[in-house]
Length: 162
Image (cartoon, rainbow, N blue to C red; front, top):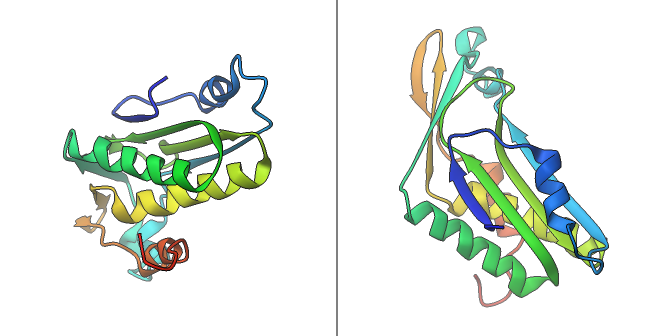
């Protein structure tokens, strides 16, 4: 199983979760996260009623993006005892309600699985080279990084930095 995939195709979260523990009797916990495209993203940012997202297009640098995700997974493996990890991020044009990202972590214990899953997602949002453009009735707009994502990633830094 590849730990990291960047792909246009949708994924089956249930199958991905099952693969994390297949033939591994030492796996005692699985934590997972599935992110979806929201229709109200721009309205949520107080842009106005015409800000309903009709679609989102994601771009990336092939090779560079996969490497960045692999480095994030390696950092998680260095912090917690993990059995298996799976990260899938979709690219291309996606509609509201469609799956955009999957992070799954299997570990011997729930604490490691929960923490690593959250760490990977926080770092993915801030350190992986993806570019998002939202399509709305008012036109398209590139999505800037959110301060809340940066703040979430900062809490994982330890003395000496990452």
